[in-house]
Length: 121
Ligand SMILES: Nc1ncnc2c1ncn2[C@@H]1O[C@H](COP(=O)(O)OP(=O)(O)OP(=O)(O)O)[C@@H](O)[C@H]1O
Picture 1 (tube, rainbow, N blue to C red):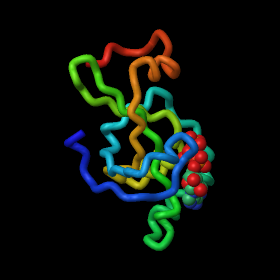
Picture 2: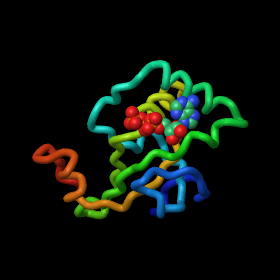
Picture 3: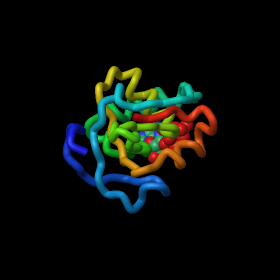
Picture 4: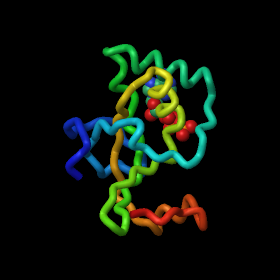
């Protein structure tokens, strides 16, 4: 995984990624989000305020991202949760977002997308 900018560091975790220590800054436009986020506007605004406050922004944990290798070795970064954090970053015009990468397979993706799962190359 050579092309991701940023250096690993530690931070708060979800139940899914508690054992994963590395956090990466990944470009927002590298994320594939198949489902549009449904958000509570007040929570998004609160997260935006927190992210903009240098003394508070570390309270926003990285989002979990499924990292999937395509059959021709392509890298795909699928994001399903973290809707409020993703939306807050989007509205702030952030170019990157902190993530924990969960190494995953096409079969994992099928759990989310079923027969709509694309042929990843
Ligand atoms: N001002 C804030 N408002 C809401 N959450 C905050 C704030 N500051 C830090 N956080 C942290 O950000 C995380 C938000 O996660 P939460 O599950 O509420 O939303 P999400 O995962 O971004 O969206 P969703 O659960 O809808 O997919 C929590 O860990 C919370 O503690």
